[in-house]
Image (tube, rainbow, N blue to C red; front, side):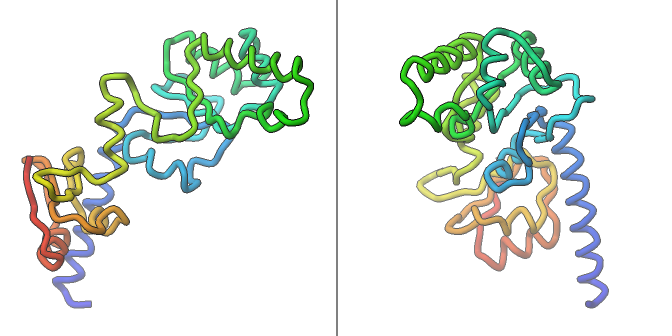
Length: 220
């Protein structure tokens, strides 16, 4: 490795660290219950949220994501009762008016639709209706997770390429520092433009990547 490449590599790593710190400070916190936030399906949420696994020490957040909800947990939440730290946290966040999401595939009672007595199954359906009345949202896909109705449409665009002037573009306008690693993500395939904020800093390696791949850098 020559001197110039070594300097570029060091600068790249510094920028990545700074970007990471800035992103965590600016992102709303999403608390994940009963699941590992490093799983593939939750990775893209980290573009928009500071995703953390539930811990007893956590006192507040903007969003709660419940990946699994057992029958006992559903019953407890439906009557506003808690027997665990997780359930107490969920109820407290609901009382604070925070958004709480439950992944539909993780709701246990639904697995027994074909075998459960109809009356019993309907009872659990009524529990589900109760927590929905409390403000809980049942979702099939984590792409539906958002902060509020006004931002839903804009945030849904973070997972896909944004089209501008009929050309696919990679939108990095929410980042203060643009590194080469940002351009090597899977979403880079097929894009023609890289959109950045007017005040964003683009690292030398990122500029080389843009030049080599014949991309257009556009400051918005």
